[in-house]
Image (cartoon, rainbow over all chains, first blue to last red; front, top):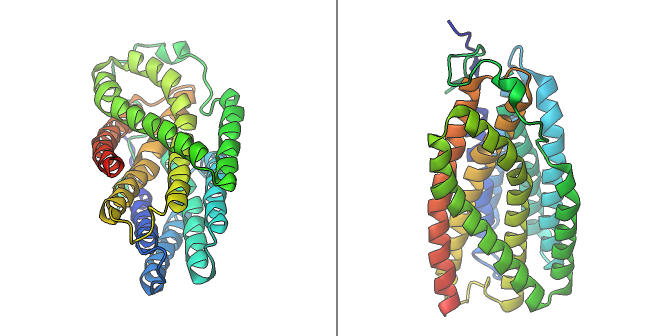
Length: 128
Length: 206
């Protein structure tokens, strides 16, 4: 009989978190160049950040998780996604995005750059 | 809600005894390709900084075409073929094809989207007053859904398959499960690329 272990739904939660920041980005982008209330985007961002925090917490409580494998993969994925996020951030600054909109978009990129490597590292390490 | 990890012991499979030792050596991320990626990203930053239409159109169209074609080809041609191959043959194709995809897809997607957005800014097509604004927003939604599927399911599965195959004794059940995920998500993304083609050609037609 194969040994099985229960793991938190990191991938599912991560995808919902990404979907929330994508929805926030689409909301802001679809109203350009008009000034729009930031509240909907901030709510989506906050929910996404909560899911990221929940994922990190849930994963940290998994007993016997192969953290060595997780970090071996996640650190390089993090480097790659920080580069991609930096590129997107440059495009925002280049196009004179400022103020609250820039803050919301930058924080969304931070969640993107952390959550994707987390999901990649989790998917690899869960099978060790 | 919790999901359950695959069994941690090997299961009977089509893999013949000794097959793991016959696997070709490979790098999960082909290091030789990184300088090419670096050059492409520098060209992208230069095109955005210059704000000239031609480089942006070139990057958006060339890389967008590559993105669409690769997704359609993977989803509707390679995916079904892969699903019907024997496990050893699938492993050989995977170790040769998937490391390249690890570099190609993030690069192609990043260049297409960044150049496309900057092009829209320069041409004014991202403004909400643009007469095809509804189609543009539809394209954001399609791309957003594709991004979530690709980032959350497809890419982790790709990396995990390759990492599993690097092990001295890969678990066939894990490879099978992850390859199924890869094939199904490739099909879904391929289907969504058809929507992208419809939207983009409609916008281009004016």
